[in-house]
Image 1 (cartoon, rainbow, N blue to C red):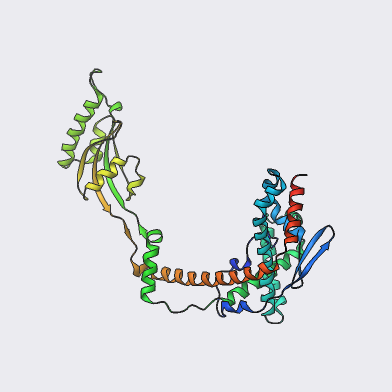
Image 2 (cartoon, one colour):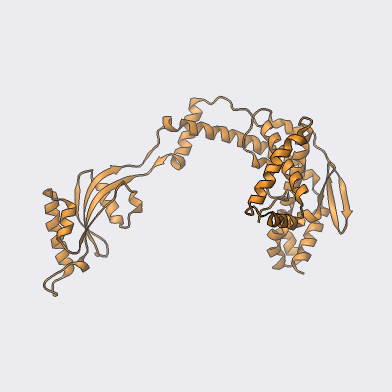
Length: 361
């Protein structure tokens, strides 16, 4: 089921690029919590005028923490679950602080501008349920939301994402040495061209040979036949024609080069390593002697890498992406520092007790 109760991830991770602004702008003084209050059987943590209820925290954490609660006493549960619950609360508070900062720094009339993208998200959500409005609505209710609150949630996500994007640095110049260093770091994972070979094969299976004398050793007969065929191949006889002449002998070939590691019989890859295109090798016996091969290597391509000039744009995109990520990480770190000031041990303890109680009812 799709989760959307503000607590899954920091919203700033949902938006990866943008222009203008500086990450340091988030150092402006953010709203401080106004306190902790009781509310109809629960607690409410208020951050800059916005309420975070114990019910929504419990709902977000229940699935994750229920197995721990059901398998231990409360003290052990608390020891294991408290860091996870604090992380959930921290993310929720960070989202609130981010949204408040975003709202403070956006122009008037932004609410109207957010209507259409929020409506688009509502339609997308319904389509996630195959266009079934009733099922989508039921999913919302299970999360404690209705259509209006879900739409408001989407507006907050969009506005916060735009704000984070505006704080990221503009793309700056990249030196050739930076590009080259990044290419060397990326090439093994992103730009490798795997080794490949292409060959023709005569496959002799001793168990399938037709022999006149049942007392003859099939393996020895197969070896004799392999040597005979090898001489004919070296004299220029076609692989396919030879395979047609002898029962128990088959022809195999790949239409295009294949990776040596993908071959069923590693001994073929080992032989190909010793050959050059046009060379013929054999007889090649498999370890269990169920096959004897004659191989003609047609193509051989060693492992290599896409040239720097061909992938330079991808390398530049990676550097730009890394710079953006670094800036987002800085924003995240500052938000988490602010969020840490908002945490309440009483609120966390209350949520832990409720989760433990509800999990063991």
